[in-house]
Every structure is written in C-alpha cells, then in structure tokens.
Image 1 (spheres, helix red, strand yellow):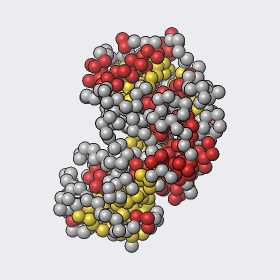
Image 2 (cartoon, chains in turn purple, yellow; image 1 turned 60 degrees about the horizontal axis):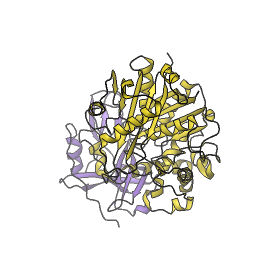
Image 3 (cartoon, rainbow over the protein chains, first blue to last red; image 1 turned 90 degrees about the vertical axis):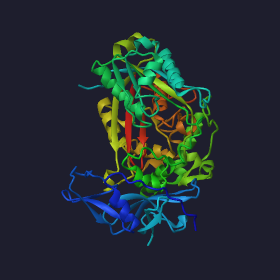
Image 4 (tube, rainbow over the protein chains, first blue to last red; image 1 turned 135 degrees about the vertical axis):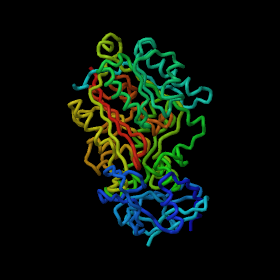
Length: 129
Length: 391
C-alpha cells in the first residue's frame, strides 16, 4: 500500500462552512440551484449556470466513476490525483486512496471516503467500490 | 471594422540567458525591451503603449516597470492570462493601435524561476485563499505536471493516443534545438529516450515536460505607417483570437479540447486563411500533450488524431508537414518565467522574416501562426492565437 499523504488544513471561506462541517461528519455535499435545477461544484454563492442565488445544499450519493487520473510519482509520497464524475453529473477534483495506484482505471466505479486533515477536519476522497 | 493588418510586429527579441542569478527581474524586463526596440530601429521615446502580464511584472500592474524604464505613455494594459498573455497582448495591441490609442506598443516578459529554485511543475502552488477554487483543489495536490497528465490520460482513453506518439513532439523539438546555441537541451533525443525517462506524473515522463529557465522576451508592435518607415522585413498581424475554457461548475467537464478551438477559429476567420495555409506554427509546449491537443483544436487535424499527426517526424522542419517550434520551444530551449507565449511569437516572427536558423528556416514563410495556452488545460485557461503575414 502507498503511504498516505498528509492533507493540509482547510480554512473555509464564508458560505462554505457547511461543506466542510458535513465532510467532518462523513457527508459529501453538493450545491443545487433551485431555479435552473442544476448542481455544481466547487460550491458557490451564485449559480455558475444561471447566476441565481437561490441555492440549496444537498447530500450527494457519494458514488461516481473516475473521469481521469494521474499517479503523481514526483510526490513524496506518491499519490493519485483524479477527477471523479459523481452520479449527479458533477465532476470534482479529488484523490483516489486506499488502493494500489497501478490498479486505478478511467471509468472505474468509486465511492467517497473521508481522510483526516491537519486542521482536525476531513477531506472527501474516493476509493474503488 | 476588421482589425486585419492594422498593425505590424516590427521588433522582437529573446534574452539569450537561461539562468540569471545576477540579474534582477526588473533588469531582465528592461534588457528585453531595449533588445526589441534596437531590433525595430526605434527608441523608448517612440513607445506610447506598454503591455505586460501582471503576474511576471514586479509592481502594480506595469507601473513600476514603466517608471524603471522611464516610459511616457498614453495606453497601458497588464492583462495576465499566464503563459498565453503575450499572444493576448499582440491582439490587444492591435486593437489599441487600430483605434488610435497608441502608435508603438512595447510588450515585455521576464522571469527567473530557475535562479529562485522553483519546482514549477511538481510542487503544488496554493495561490490566494480568496481564489474560490483553492480550498476545493489545493488539498488534493494539483501541480502543473499532474494536471496536464490528467489531460493526457483522458486523451489516451478516448482516442488511443500513446506515450510514443507524445514523445514524437519532444523528438521534433530536439531536432530543432540542436541548431540553437542558446537552447538548454540541445541534444537530439529518441522516442525510446523519452518514454524511458523517469515518470513524473503518469503518463507524463520527465522528457514530456518543458524546461525551467530564466530570461524573457519582448515585442514592438506599430502602426502600418511606422512599420513602412523601418528597415526590417514587414510582418503584418492578420488574425488574432482569444477564448477561455472553464470547468463550468463541473457539469459536462470535458478535458479533450482547449480554448484554442475558439481562439483559433476567430484568428483564422479574421485572417481569411485556413490551417492548410500555415507554413510554420509556434505551438505552446508546456508538455507534449499540450501540443497534440492544440494542433487538433486549431484544425491541423481532426480531434483525436493529434497523436497520429505528430508521429514520425511530422513536426520537424524540412521533414514533416507542419514545422513547429524551430527554436526548440519550451521543451528544449526556453520557458522564461514559466510562460511560453512570448517565445512562441518571437520564433514565428523569425520564421516570417526568414531569419530563423538556416537549418530550420521554412522555405515558404508567407503565413505563420503562433498559439498558446495560459493557466491549466485541466482546470481553467485562456487560449490565444496570432496569425502573421510576411509582406
């Protein structure tokens, strides 16, 4: 197994506290627009699709597929950075963890797992189902 | 009003240094400015417009450099789109000159990441915490190399592009760099050497990545009447385009194309030419995949066929159909300040003038192109395209 990365603390900017509090509780949250009915990520206070401020947090199913990835050999330790497309149709940057890097594939089904960070919070990562 | 032909690139200069521990950033900016003005046959009192990227220029916008160089201006523009800034500046200078805002525009770039020991491609750069994407990306360790590696991985998945095909981009650049006395990596390399070099960010190897170098470059752009009064070969700006590409809230994220698709279309439309009319192309080569993607987006081949297109020496001057980066590009010669757009324009000007190294000068050089990407192909970036005509 690979050595785990040490994840930096995250200081939430105003409006994003909910995302990081939920992550600490083991939940992945997505912002949805009540007007255009579309989700987005990273979360904003204004919808990037229609500029509405009528937005709501909803818990994501936490499952998706690997859109693309790279094994960062130059990292110390090495790590797998990826984009995962969630069931909700939103693609987010993440790390693929708890797996031999060589076994990661594009299209692989993954589910969210939470890794502790240095600030006592949690970071949403993904691992193969 | 069409902007086509309303300005000319009359001066171009690339700093010969690749490592400048003894020079300040301001000095490098000023030295390239002097070099480009000398090349044009103009002096600083002729300059009434200054263009720079706020990211590589010390001070507030261009203000400190304007003072350092002692300029008196009536038009300033510190637009920063990363490595493509200087291609964007060519377009903005064309607009400013066409609308009478200035007569002679100076564009400068300088940087010294090599002397400062910057791990450009492999160390995550956090940026400002107020940048809205930072807290959702930085913890995952994004670096320039692994971001472009993700683009390469997806291209391989969708189109069957191979590491060997990507390697051909570097091989072609090295064939050109051997003739450039200033190139950081002048040795010719083989496909095998590229694919057997250490993996940095899978699937990109060390030799898929550009160099880290100090230095800079400058351009002087002027009204047609001024260009006509100078002794240098006349290089007319006939097409420009710029376009951004974003993650779009993560909905429909597609890493198989770049902003070059729209910027290229705009530039070709203004110029009234087609990709098949281009005799030489400077294509930003932060990584080998960057070249493959942009060649597709500019229409030199179909989407997905870029790997096949660049293979077997097709980018080598005198050998292939599309001679590219005949100075050795960022992959072998120079990537000053981690920003490759300036040197792309400079080599395109050399080619249009017929002043590239004789071993790599293309025979017919009436229409040439320069294109670049700034930011990251995997997140948010700006593509910019410039088409030049030798008059």
